[in-house]
Amino acid sequence: MSPQPAHLRLVFDGGCPFCQCFAELSELKGGLPQLEIVDGRANDQLRRSLKAQGYPLSGGAVLMVQMDGDTRMFHGPAAVALLCRQLRPSAGLLGLLKMVFASRERTERLYPLLLWARRLALGWRSLPIDPDHHEP
Image (tube, rainbow, N blue to C red):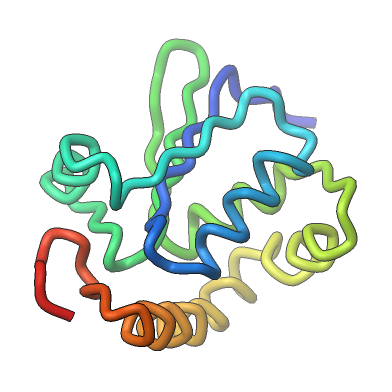
């Protein structure tokens, strides 16, 4: 069994209702007290820093894993798969999401559908796909 990370920080697009629901479920019912959830759309400095490092929120959530003084970054499907493998869900929906997305390969195949749903949801809310752009 691999050691538990000292700290997990999930940076997600708070404008996307699907992303927000997943983040809130993970925080409230994921069984990970070391998990911190950050709305990247509301945190300009962090979001821009991640984008400059090659992790734009328009391409998916970012999971920052701190372990032994080192921080590793996971983006998009890699972030979702790793977080789902870490979860200890107490909620039914989160348990289902863990079963579906804990596999990196399955998540890679399904992730384009998640991005498509995100695009639709942001469009319905008249929000830009890229939080750093002001037009939808």
